[in-house]
Amino acid sequence: MSTLDRNLAEIAARHGVDLACVTPPSRASRLESLRKIIARTDVPYPITPQRQERYLNDFQSGKLFGIGTLSEDMVELENYAEFQDYEKYTYEEHLSWACLVADQQRTKHQFACQEYLKGESIFEIGGTVIPDYYLLNARIYQQTQWQLATVNMIIPAELFFTCHSHRLFPVTTFMRGLEVDYLEEPDIGHDVAGHVATFTIPAVADVMKNHGDARDLIYAERDQKLKAAGDEESARRIRDDAEELLLYAGRIYWFTVEFGLVMQGGQVRDFGAGILSSPGETTYSIESRESNRILIDPSDDHDLLRLATTDYLISEFQKTYFVMSSFDQLKSLTADRILMASKRAMELPHYTWREIVPGDKVIDVGELATSTNEKYLRLMLDMPLDDCLTRAALRNLQLYSKGLSSQQLSAFKIPPAELPQEALEWFRNQDQTPTT
Image (cartoon, rainbow, N blue to C red; front, top):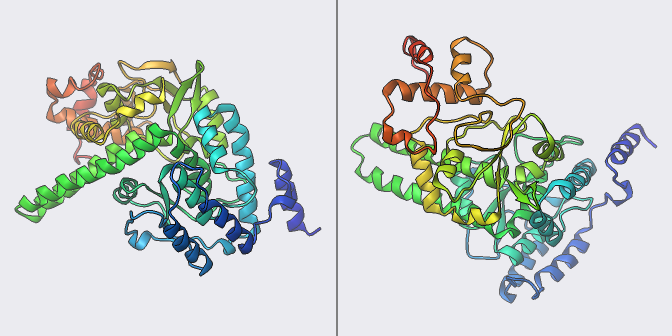
C-alpha cells in the first residue's frame, strides 16, 4: 500500500468510512437509476412523460447539469452559472463527502429535529459518494417542486433570492477538503447535505420561497422609484436602499433557515442547514456554554425585528442562536412581513451576535455574551472588537448622534439601554465620520 493510500485509509478509519464503498457509480448505473426515479408516480409531484423524456435525453446526450428543467421556471445565472461534471470528481473528493456525511449523521441523529431527519431519509442524504445532481434534482422536484441551480461561488443576495422566488435553490459543485468541518463559503457538503432535507419541512420551504417573493417586492418598489429619480445620485441612493433591505431580509433568513433551532419534546433541536452541515457546530449549537440561546417567536413583530436588527459574522460558529417553540411560528413569515421588518430595521439601532438585549426570553446566557453598551465602551477605549460589534457600534453612534425619535424606539419590545453619553461625545469629536 502506497503512502497516499495508507493516509486515505487512516482518514477513512477516523470517520468510520469503509474505503471499499467509496466508489462512484458508473454512468450506465446512474442512467438506470434516473430512469427509475423519474418514472415514479407514488410521489407528491410526478414528472410528466414529456418532461421525463426531455430530462432523460439531456442526461443521455452528455449535457452537464446546470439548472433543473422539470418546470417552466428559469433564472438567468449569467457569470455565476456552473455545471456539475460528475466524472471529474476525484477519489479524494468522494472520500471527503463520505467522511463529512458520516460525521454529520452522528451529530444529526443526536441533535437534529425529527422533521429534518425524515427529510434526509426521503432524499437518501448520506452514502459514500457525491450525489449526481440529475438524480437528486428529480427527487427534490417530485417531493417539493423545488429544483437545483448550480453556481460557481457565493452569489449576490439579489440573485440568491431571485432563485428562491422560482423555487430554484443555488448549489455549488465543489467539495471541501478532507477533514474540513466548517467553511465560510458554501460547498456540496453545505448545499446538499445541509439544505436539501429542509425542503420537506413545509414551513421552512415556504419561508425560503417568501424570501424570494420579498426580493421581488423590494425590487419592484426600487424600479418604480428609479423611474421618478431626477439624477444619478438619487438613483444610486435608491439602489443602495434596495440592497440594504435585502441585507436585513437576509438576517431573518440566516437566523431561521440557516441557523435556526426549534423546541421538540422539551429539548432544543437543530433544523438550520448552516448548523447541520457542520458536525462541529451541530454539537456546539446545543451543548456549548459559549453561545446565547434565545426563545423567539417570528409571528410577533417585535421578535421578527429582533432578527432583522441583529448583525452576525460568518467566519466562526455563531454566538447567539434563536429558538422557536414550533415550526407553526414560521408560517407567519410572509413576504410582506419580511419586507416590513426590513424597512423598520433601516431606521433603527442594531444589535450584535453576542448581546442579550432587553425583552429577550433567554434559555442560556453564553460565556461570550456582552451587554448592549459594551461595544461602545470598547470602541471608545480602543479595546478588541470583532467586525460585527464594530459595525453595529459605529452605525448606532451615527444614529444616536442625529437623534432617535420615541416612535423609532417604540418599534422595540423594550427600547435599548440608554447609550453612554461619554461614548456619544467621543464619537462626535472624531475627525472622520465612520461609515456603516
